[in-house]
Image 1 (tube, rainbow, N blue to C red):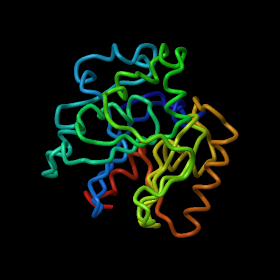
Image 2: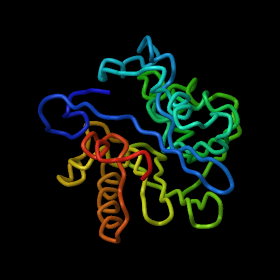
Image 3: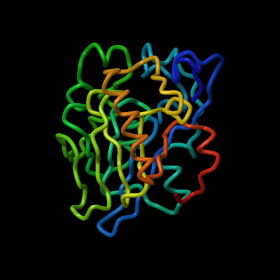
Image 4: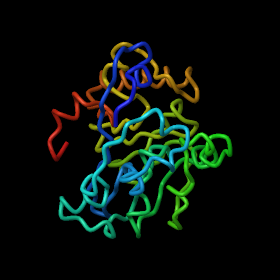
Length: 233
């Protein structure tokens, strides 16, 4: 996607083009997807985004949908057993309907916020993205996904009411939108939109603490970092 840079990092001039990430994790108890990208309707129209559609230019192909990305890895979308949603904005959960057998794992606070009529009318949330008939697991705070410490969901609210990030093997932190990109973190600059600015700024400090402890922080919308990542993190 592309937007005004100031929407992503307040005060930045010009335009910013950035990836929309989803991450596949192979666990002995099943395949886990952290975020699922955008809805297939966005291949041809931004109408489902309502007012939010005017903020972003979207580049999307069939191969770029989560089902296409999984197919490129030789993975059947039906084999994904768990779909973790960092939050329920359209670019992070739009592919849930392409994962027919996945249990959706999301924070209760996020599920509630995503059904707020005003938020839905604006277009950041679209219940058609996540009301897809899947089993769901609603959380209240941090959660060890398989009880073995390998995949730990950590509450990182601020960007949204119930945002969560995923710590993988204690060494890689999938940030979601707790912070959009390295530039924002390094300059301690919030985006134009935040549900709770104070909590998100505390989240920035938490991310820096994680890095200081040796954890690799992986952003979902950072083009320079994305260019350095291989198929396996």
